[in-house]
Length: 400
Figure 1: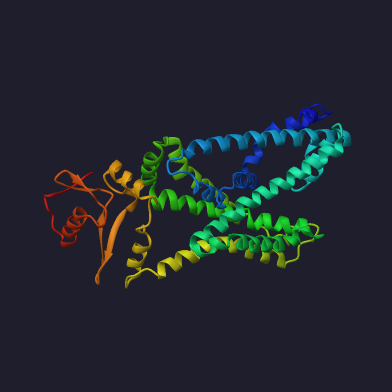
Figure 2: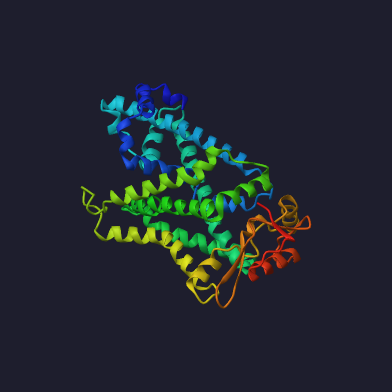
């Protein structure tokens, strides 16, 4: 970076980087690219963060780690941008052309801009070898996280595969290797562009939108606040709660809708005519491979629920299972003593021949000063029986 900023024309390149173009704020492509950059840079909505987080201790203060990672990611992105645009400014100076004509995105940044900067360093061949070895390690490191996210889910669903982890990992890596071979052919850059647009663009934005709905709306902001308070003694500010519940989903939904409205197929939007008409069909199949998982599994879980009516099935599908909550028994006991009830259970329900009878566990019942709302407890059972019979018993006081 030091060498790059000392080159002729580097200042103009850095100014081009940081000088805003306010009219571009109305271009949804900028917002979509910014969202995609954040998702890929932090691996948001792709699984690795959830997978790595599952190995943390129960009371790990992950909000501090999240702030540190986001801050470091921003700093490293700024440093990398300064390096790139200082070199691009130098190239524009040498060619006597506007910086905008040489500031192109895509793989060219790694294979043109950086090598150009390295060629101006002492012992350029050494730095070139170290740089591309670093790129190799970065790709390998990213693959570790992405692949392990899928394998961890597979091993959790089928525990018998854990004894064959090396074999399963080898098969998965082999499949990924074969799937990646088209990317190193003569048309590999076009394949990468297609994958980046359909597989990693609006698809990830839509997945992130549904993740937000699932956590902050379906599970509920209040339940999450209770979990954070119990696990980490952390209470999110109104700013973060507003971002999680309102601002982030609205922005993602706006970007997705605008992207779809402004959608142009590759075949009709390619002036060089290098994309065949069937390329967009392949792209949509790639996008649906991830997006379609959401409605398909939702319908599957809805159909397998007990109950004669769809209303009952929908209610049962939206209830937490008995396994939901802290995995360790001592943490479950600590939660009960901390709150006086297991708040994550939400609403308990049973299915009768006529209807689904329900009880609001979110407002606990107290009997003679005792609070215990575990489904197997006597207090819960007695209070529940009175609710089913439609009677009020003064012995059970609902706590607001």
